[in-house]
Image (cartoon, rainbow, N blue to C red; front, side, top):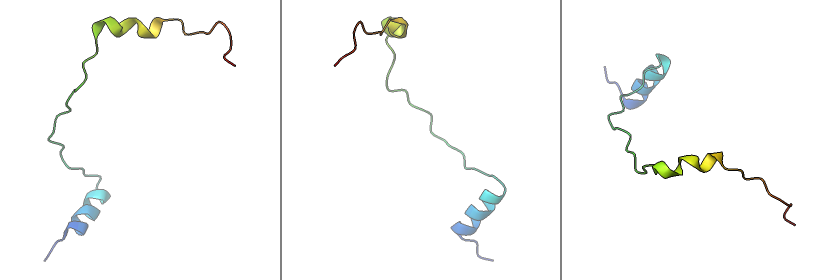
Length: 50
């Protein structure tokens, strides 16, 4: 019996089977430790901008 890619995909969907992801997540941006206080600043405006 011949089995094609569509049949395999259909069976995998039916039984909720997913393929294995072999790649690791690569972190390209390292946060600067001195930037940790940026979110604790007061960003309220004195007057509305016209």
